[in-house]
Image 1 (cartoon, rainbow, N blue to C red):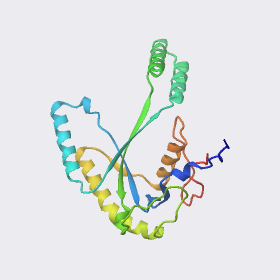
Image 2: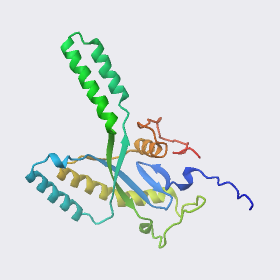
Image 3: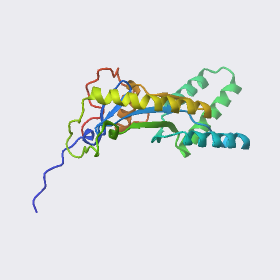
Image 4: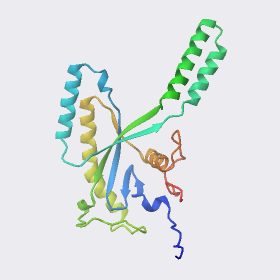
Length: 222
């Protein structure tokens, strides 16, 4: 049996993002999207009346939607070594032996907790899509295999996407406020960092240089 040719591809060949312009994701499908980050509520700590009110408010929010909406929860293991170092420093320089002993006990409690359980950071996102169907494309724009040229110029896609996405974004942010949550649209810089860290995972998120006019790919080839 002859050896088949090695498969040479980079992660970018499978990435749906064509570009990020004006805080909007331009997709290789000729669609677009905005990404909203939102806060969360500890439902279990609410009283029964507060839980009922929150459920009704959330139901009202869902019923107000006339467009698709994707909810994404991103969990990432946190590196708290710097926090542990800070506690050790405070313990070392504390002159009061009673307080120093309490800091030591707290440090040991934290270490035993992270040894038995993973400390996770959770972030919550809402993805508001702009469908290529809104551009008059009757069939789905395929991106399988090699990268294909977009059917329209980026400026045209961006202009149409803004007209469609901005009212949806504003509606969602108003509805989140009624539920008691805070939402915001991720800017270009944070979008680049988010997707870079998703495809180049580390314990803690990596901060990148200024993304305006960036020329390097979001992910390194593999």
